[in-house]
Length: 100
Image (cartoon, rainbow, N blue to C red; front, side, top):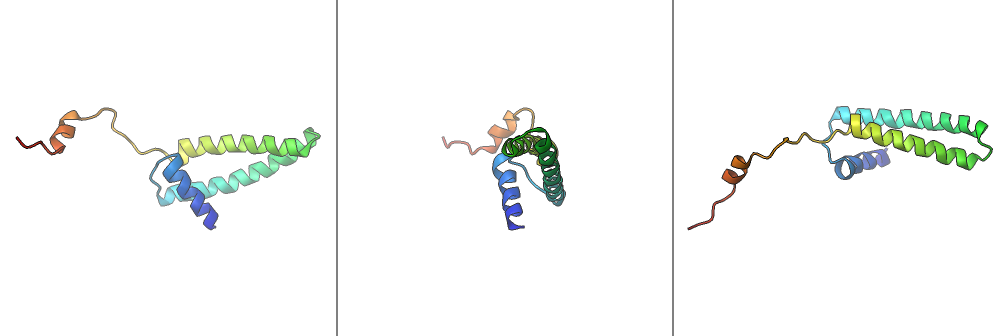
């Protein structure tokens, strides 16, 4: 459980730089469970098609990794909303003015 918390915190702060809520954490935990099930099922199916189990596992893990990254980026850990343009009046009014 602590590994999930560490991974969630690292993804949130360093990879996607977003702010999390309880909803975000629940979505992340759901993604972990779903991606584990998908990974296992995909590995089993690919092992029946590909004669080398290691290749099947690597292929399945790469596909799940890409899915997880895109899902996290677009639905779970959305970046903080930034203003579209800089308000230069506020920027310059907020700075301390040099003394004359």
